[in-house]
Length: 148
Image 1 (cartoon, rainbow, N blue to C red):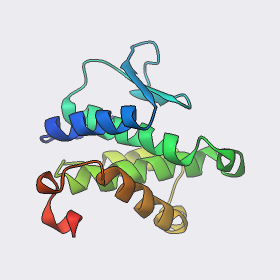
Image 2: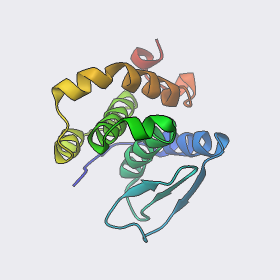
Image 3: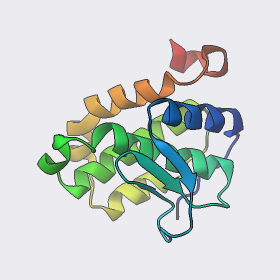
Image 4: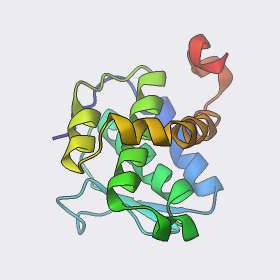
């Protein structure tokens, strides 16, 4: 169970605008349950009725898939790599806006057999992708330590 908490409202709205602005369709559907979200290459659907913090973290995860894994690179990497990278991006961006993540991201990465070695190998792409997503937020609404 992914347990993200905190204030995500204004950032969630900005993230949805970022998604739409990149030409990615966005919506809610319970058809993909138990998955909390799904990225379908040009569209993202989230489960309805999640908290704003959960929606935010899930949407960042799915946006990371769209940015990183919907190209020919997808065929070159394993599902473990894809899920580890997407969840690491969700963790970095969620923490940057002040959400509490508990062990949710670590638990998710372990579910897909990701580990510290894999995270280290993906660090550069995770950092770049998190920076692109964080760029969607107004500088005055992003913590100074992140914006710097």
